Length: 225
Image (cartoon, rainbow, N blue to C red; front, side):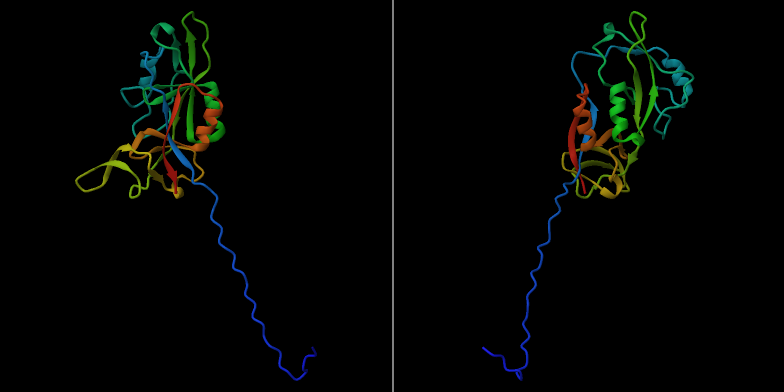
C-alpha cells in the first residue's frame, strides 16, 4: 500500500505503562525490655566490701547515681566485691546491684560493640573467698533517658496528676510504639516516665543472644514508627 503524500499524518497515542509503587520492604525495628533474669534459689553470692566509703562519695544515702543524674560519682577507690558461694548462687554475666548492673567483661564488650555511647562503666575489684583475685567485672549504667513512647497509639498504663500531666508509667504492654524521630539509630535507653526500665533494640538483643550471655532476658514491648 502506497501512502498518499497529501494525506496528513495521523497522531498515534501511546500509553505509557505506569509503574506500580513498590511497598517498602524495610521492617520497623522491634524493641525489648532488657533486664536480669529473676531466678529462684535466693540471693547472689557477692558482697560490696567498701560500700560505706563509696556512698560517702555521692550525694545520696544509698549506693547509686546522684539524684537527677545517671552514671557514677567520682569514687575514692574502685568498688570492691567479694564473690563467695556461701552468700548465694554463682554470679552470672549480669546481676543487679541497687540502681546499677554488675556485668562481666565479655558482656561489657558486647554492649560497647553495639552502642558505646549508651553506657557508663566503672571497673570493679573482685576477690574470691580464698583471697585470690576474681574475674573482671564492671558496674554498668544506661545513660539515656528518653520520652520516646507514642502514648496515643500505645498500650501503656499511665498515672496522671490532677492537671492531666503524665507523672509516670505503671506498665507497658507488647503493643507499644516508639517515636522514630526520638529513637532512630539508638539501641538502648531508659524511659523518661519509668527510668528503672531499660529498653533495647532487636540489634542489641541479637548481639547478646549470639554471645550466649547468662542471666539476661528480653521481653518484646513494641516497634519503632
